[in-house]
Every structure is written in structure tokens, then in C-alpha cells.
Length: 83
Length: 157
Image (cartoon, rainbow over all chains, first blue to last red; front, side):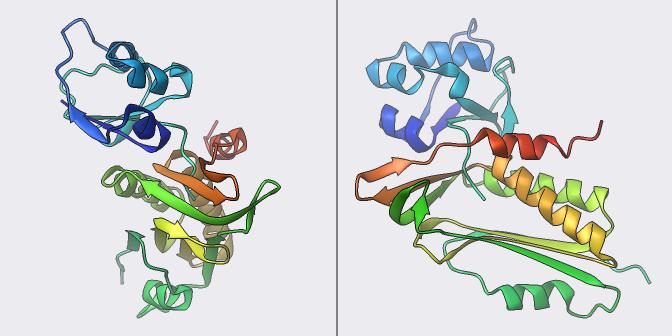
């Protein structure tokens, strides 16, 4: 699945997007944040405070207990400041 | 005669012309009694810190989809003849426009309420992120709980 990063999440990781293949036991958005955080220091830094990270699956906001199976695109970003 | 609603949602770097957008929203119709316009403008300071510019980043695809959902909700909750939301992205300097919301209805209550609803929802949920340039350098602006609270008050109990 494709994963996209925005704002300071993108800056800390150092990339805007990538394709990932999480193992089957990574079932929810929260699980995925934990799995990504263990990929390296830049990821750990980006996800160091999971509760401020917001997520979207296929262009719709989801909570951390949302299931990721079947998702084409998952995005992680800070709380929004539009408008 | 039943007329279709005019819903316009655009995300663009270029500035917008409010009078032209109002004309586009109302043209050809004589059933509109109220047009409400809100425009968000870049200030020259954030908190107490003077800023040289804002930069708006967004999530292409999701920003349009999310604002589209807000628009659909507004159209179903209030008797509007149409609405327009334009959100700029890219580098914006103090005094420049950032966002435009227009609503049109037969009467003013729906137009006022829908415009406020759209702004509250956009601020809380639309995937845009502002960074500021100041003497200290570039930094991300933090979201305020106030905006989430403003959006929450529109939830019907």
C-alpha cells in the first residue's frame, strides 16, 4: 500500500511517500504507526507522540483503531491548520 | 422551475476575485435573496511574532474530497442555492487572501449559518498545513483546540 506523509511528519521522516508491505499482524492504523516507528530513527522521531498524529485512509479521516487491510493509500499528518 | 445548485470547490495557488466569484454563484438566478461571503486573509503576525509569509501545504485529492463532503453536508442541512469554497495554497504574504467561502440562499439565516459551518469544518478537518516565515526562520503553525471545538458545536444532538 502507498503511504504519504505531510508537514512535519514528512520533514522528520525525510520522504513524502513510499510503498510499504506491513505484515499481517499489523492490522490497525495504530499498529501501523508502531510498525513504522520501528523502521529507524527518523520514523521514531516523526511518530514519537502517536496521539498527535492524524491519519487518513483513501482520502478520508480515520481513527487509530481503523483497520488498514484493503487500503490503497494511507496518509499520516499533524493536526490541520487550514482555512 | 427547479434549478440545480451551484457548488464550486477549487484549490489553487492564484488569488481569487471575490466579486467575480459572487457573480458566478448568482448569475442567471432571481431566487437568491442573500449572499454571504467570508474571506480569510493573511495577517502580519502569528501570536506576537511578526511574520514575513505563510506557506500552505495540502493533501491533493483529499483536500477536494473533504471540502466536497463539507459542502454536501451544508447543501443538505440548509436551503442553499449554491456555495463556493476556494482555498489557496503555496506562499502567501500578509494582506493576501487565503480562503473564500460564499453561500447563497433565498433568506439570510441559512446563508450566514452555512458559511460559518463551512469555515468551522474547514478549519478543523480540511487537510492543509500552514508554516510561517519569521525572523526566527520557518516553523509549522500548531492547530488550536478552539477550531475543533468550533466544529463540534455543529453536531446535532
